[in-house]
Amino acid sequence: MPYEPSTVWQYDVPTTGSTHLPPDAGYGKALTNQGYGFEVAVADLIDNSIDAGADKIVVHFLRDASRILTLLIIDNGHGMDDAGLDAAMTVGRRRQYDEHSLGMYGTGLKAASLSHASSLTVVSRTKRSRAAGRRLTAEGIEDGFRCDTVDPVYAQELVDRYDGIIEWHGTVVRWDRVRSFETVAQGQSDKYLSNAISRLENHLGLYLHRFLQRGLNLDIAVWDVSTGDGTLGEEVDHIAVEPLDPFGYKVPGKAGYPRKFTAPVEGVGEIRLSAHIWPAKSKLAGFRQIGSLSERQGFYFYRHDRLVQAGGWNGLRNPEGHLTLARVAVDLPAHQNSVLSLDVKKEKITVTPAFTLGVESAVDSSGSTFHSYLSDAETAYRDGTKRTEIARKPVTPPGKGLDPKIKRVIKEELPEKAGEEPVAITWSTLPAGRFFDLDRENNAILLNRSFREDFNDGRRGGANDAPMMKTLLYLLLEDCFGLGRWERTRQDRIEYWNTILIAAARAKRERREHAVL
Image (tube, rainbow, N blue to C red; front, side, top):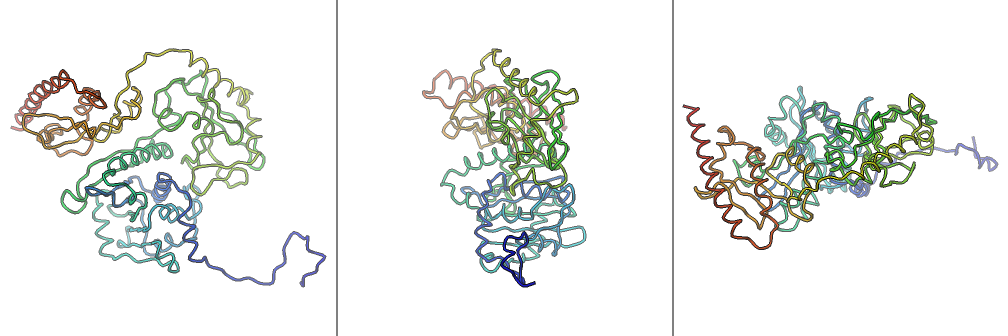
């Protein structure tokens, strides 16, 4: 039908044809500037591993003596063949998701990776296909979205290196030329990596806590490729990510909680709200170690058990100090709707007024309103602040070499000295008459590696081995760091502790050798 001026205000704009307009290579710059934080980007890739059925995932940092080189994420999911790899690396291609998938938009792998690395490599194999790989680089995108095929020999070698994780099937995602790694100043790699791993551990422990509680094995490992046997190198740190449950208290802050409220939301239907009140002054990691208490009050939205927003009232009200104990779990409805929208990075929910109006009208099974819940949370906070506690002496925080589970308990039980670098515990070459030494300049407790096997039942042990012995030494020695003048009495204490511990270590060795005989 020819266009008639009188129809200019009609709802459907008339057209006369169409053409396909593929993305220009300049879109690559937009792809690499999606605003992904480092931890958010890694979490997005782990979502892909979970969707692939993986129950074992390792985030693997490779470094040498002075630099951080590469990041890899390895999983034992069902893997991809050549066609699957081509589809996964196609920019703008949206795959089919099942009703429980964590993926949504089909851009996470490329956008999350290229936001941080100039080169993304994916190597994978299935039960029925050989190892294969693809590489996407910033230069390749500018060259008409060119994707390189990885040499199949290298692909097989990479899979074989991780045979403790990938057995019959699995995937390796590799980031090279990571921009934040390349900007680390000379001599600052250890500090940067320690901080990056701590933030990553907390983020993954929080946002994937339901999966971790159900048995997902998620580790963070660091290998120094300049040492060891020349292939993977030597493991210098290893952390098993533990769940950080934002609702993991043992006793609620008010009897009768949590309570279930039902909110009638126009355009969605009924939404269930699980309203919790934390106990005041809780020291548990799920309360204290997941960020600012004011920011962590409010709604915790989950999509298919994956946390996608950790706190915030979404326009219902502003954060307030007397509501820091209030947290509300909301499982998003399975069907798509126009009321609750998840951003592409999967860290924030945008809501329309229909949601907040529904929450305002929410009631529980007894007819109590959501406002009564907020009032209870305020009362619990005010009552809790009246109670006094014995002030514990702050400590220098524990660092690398101590099992993360122990570090978490220490942080829950003891306040940290502000501005102090964590104390690392490492095995080192020391004289025969020294069980330990202090490197106060680098905040490290050095252990005589000649005794290492004795504390690991004859085995080599990992980066976080001998937890009991290391914990006791940390508790004894943490106050030796961050001091000004070094007193003679303190040095004398170090000397006689060494003498006594050397005797104890030799006695342990004799017992072990006798048991073997």
